[in-house]
Image (cartoon, rainbow, N blue to C red; front, top):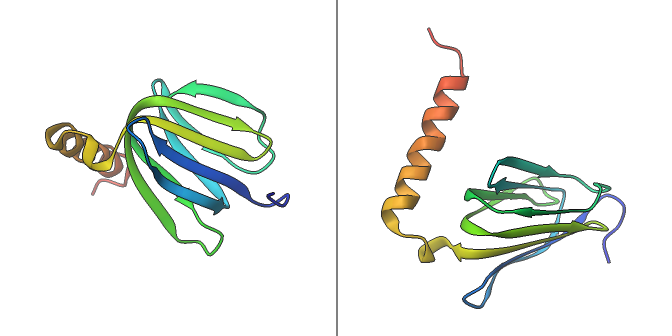
Length: 114
C-alpha cells in the first residue's frame, strides 16, 4: 500500500513479463494524444498509450526509462498500471530510433536558440 506521497507503479507487456514494479514519486506516460504526468492524489483515468518513453521518478530521485508502444494506462487510487503492447526490445529498432530522434529534436527546439 502506498503512502500519500508515493505511487505504486507497474509496467507490463502483453507478451508477458513485468518491466517495472515498485514505488515512485511520479510517472510520465506517452499517450496517443499527448503526455500524462501522474503525481500522488491524481484523479482516476484510463487512457490509450502512444509510442514513447515512460519515465518513472523513483523516491530517491533517479529516473527509470522504459520505451513503450501501444496499450493503455490506468491510474486509480495512486496505483499506476501501464499495460503496453510492446516494451523495449519488442519495439522495432527503426521505430524506436525514429522516436528517440524526434524526442531529441523537440528537446532541442524547445531550448534557447543562439
